[in-house]
Image 1 (tube, one colour):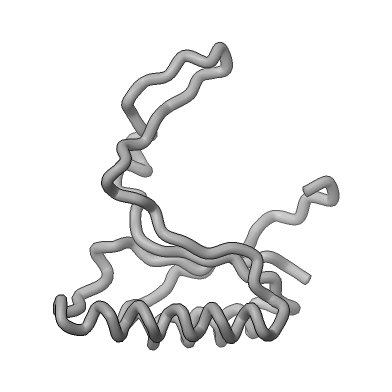
Image 2 (cartoon, rainbow, N blue to C red):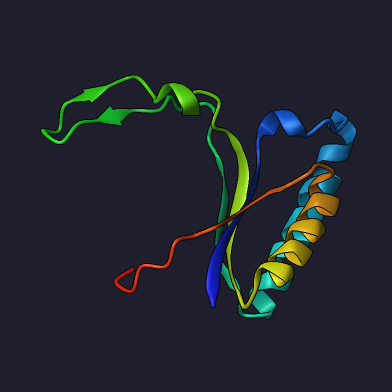
Length: 113
């Protein structure tokens, strides 16, 4: 089985405030379905109220981020699935629930992880 990251940036969601509760419940319903299917690994969202922190090898910290991840936000989940085709099916379920397209990425297999 392969782990897949399904995610979206916060800016992709164009949902009226009054619809956000329904979107949240629809997304949680997909996650509950994934848990029941035994494929759920982890899910959540990036807390945009907490600034990123760069940590160097010596432990030195700066309030910064990599330039290319400056706008890393939104929601994500990691599912363990038998194929990319099945991952596309789950990404489509999340796209419908969240009312926005989802990005699908495959984790590189590392036998020690």
